Length: 205
Image 1: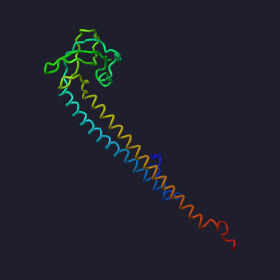
Image 2: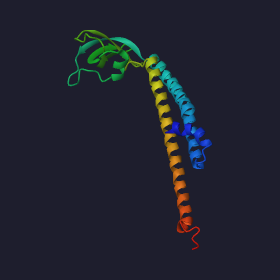
Image 3: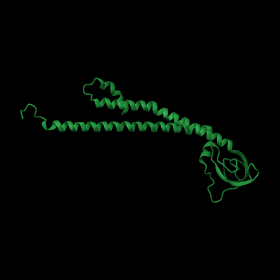
């Protein structure tokens, strides 16, 4: 609808039947289209860049605070699903992760035992697996990869661009609707003034 109205500006310019409101609506559509093509992508790019910057800082922090260590499987978790409740790590690793109860050592040498997620296919008791721990030695999720963070930022930028374009189109429709309402009001006022005398011109009444 917006593009159609913009294309009509040139056609309506020399059309004697074109009303001023038609030109106004076309100009509103042109402004909305320009904002959709320029402002909305610029806003999305800005939002995506800021999001990527924030996520990359988080990635660097996670990689600085989390470390890979070796743990020994003790048993399967009792009364819980064998599949790990860590979908983000599973996606990042590209594998199916399972939950096991394992034992490992913290950086200070303290023995730790807890339920952890692993992508290892061997999860029998006594098997050695690699897990992520935080600075205190507690089990932690796999840190986010820079590429995953960048993908999230790109999706955020696209979302903001689409949202901005949708808001601009909504605003255009509201402005056009308001212009039409004012047009109808003026038509009603004009008809109220001339309606009673309609058809009487030249009758001598």
